[in-house]
Structures are given as C-alpha cells and as structure tokens.
Length: 339
Image (cartoon, rainbow, N blue to C red; front, top):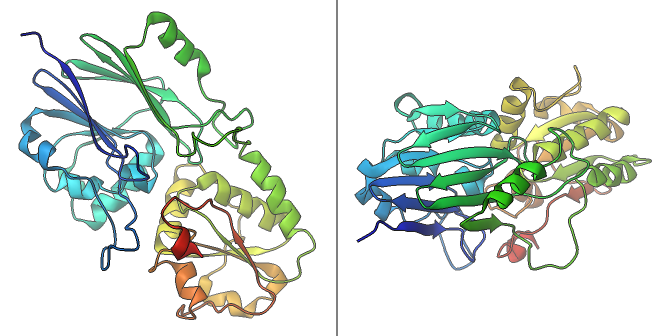
C-alpha cells in the first residue's frame, strides 16, 4: 500500500486560537505552530486553552521538528506545554525565537530545548519534508509562510498574513515567490485569515498611525492605549506619536514589557532615548506629557487594563478626562469580557 500524506489539525480549524497543524508522511512528522486559545465565558477557573497533544506524545519519536510561523500567542503560546512532553528542534525567525525563549525560560525548559534561528528565504530538511520560509506581512515582524515540499507534492501553509503595500518595516509580502510556487504546482493551500469571511480588504498598518496622530493631536489629557502585546508595529506607532507630541511612554503588563525588551534588543523597535518612563513615576508627570501602553485589549481578567478598569491597579487609576484607546479588534468569543 502506498504511503499517504496526512494533514491533521489539532487546533485552529474553524476556531480562533490554539493553532497547531501536523504533517505526516511515512515515518516522519513535522508540527507547524503550537498556540493557545482564550477560554470562553463558561470555562470557569480556566486561564488558557491548549490543543490536545495526545497524538504527538504517542508519536514523539517520529517528530522531526516544530516550525513556527510568527510570534503571536495563538501560534506559540502552547510551546512550553508541548516541550514538556517531546524533544524535537524548534525552527523560527529571530523575533519569534526571542519570544519563545522567554516562555521556555520561565518554564525552566530553555536549556533542554534545541532552537534553530532561520530567516525568510531559507529552507530546512526534516525527514522527508523540506520546509522553506517565505516573507509575509502581519502585525508582528518576522512572520513567514511555509512552502512544505513532500514526496508527493508541495503544500503552502500561509500562517496569518495580509498583503500590505505600505508595511511599517520589513518590506512587502513576497508575492513573487508565491507566484513561482503556483506556476510549479501546489498540492494543497492551507490559508489562515481570521476575518476572511468579511467583505472588503484590510487597510495598511500605516493607516493606523494616521488615526493615532488625530487622537493625540490637541489632547491635553492623559492617554492610555491598549493593544495586543505582540503587535510590535502598533506599539511602534504609539511611540512615534508620543515622541512627536512631547509625551513620555510608560508600559504596564509583563507581556508588553517583554515584547518591548526583545524587540528593542533585536532592532525591530526604535525607542528614542529618554522617552520611556517608569510606571512608578507617572504621577509626577502632567497628564499632557504621558502615554500609558497597556495589555488587556481582549478583556483578560488578569491583564493591566482589567485591573485599571476595576481600580485594582497599584500605579494607575482612571481619572475623568483620560483618553482610553482600544487599538485592537475583538477576537470572536471575547466580546462580553471586553464590553
């Protein structure tokens, strides 16, 4: 009997979050992404949701590698829980490597995990699979699609992507490479796009910066901005506006602090000297001179914005006149907690 190619979704199919896809041919298995999901309103006492990894644990000896498309939580959040159970190398781009290294370090797994840093355009051989990384646009730098070459044909796994003709950094999506692959023949395309059912098209990330400018211009009160911690381009645009209008920036939320540190160290974010302010010092600054960037855009109960909203934050208290900007769409399922 001829060997078959198996594509198994352990998460992320017809749902938002916990993306994890298994590709299997013969004796070889590769895993693309290992994300987490948000609990719904009926999951009392549950902080995060991760994919069922039973199949991978049973077949751990056959796993040749784990490839990560980008550094968002719904694609890397379950990595520590996966690496507790299996020992396989992880392949990812520099920023994604930086973010998973923090996670693995917190779980005491960094020293026992093999991590290989790759860049768009590079390929790696994993058993019978050959995986090529392709540059794409997304709200976080270093996002890639994957061309997965198998003994019976080529698969294209897009990861989250958008076609942005004016990206904040990194250049436009490599449409030419997708065209080349299409001309040679693709066995299966596995696209990933959260709002693909909605009509219209996504505007450029640079348009968000223009809106920030409108909201900052002429504002004489304190500004609080919340967005996804991993949305590096969005945070950079807030920083740019703060610098333009003479405001200092304070950051609240551990994940936001981690992102800022890693992105700055790797050169993906540019923060002018003296712009950042310690969160404990903001009470000494006049309101028109401060911007607070915080986590909690999805109403997460332990996030900084949630604690601010319910007056449980140690350093920040909402005051009359504060301008609060929620710069993130609601992830389906989170509408109630956000409201």
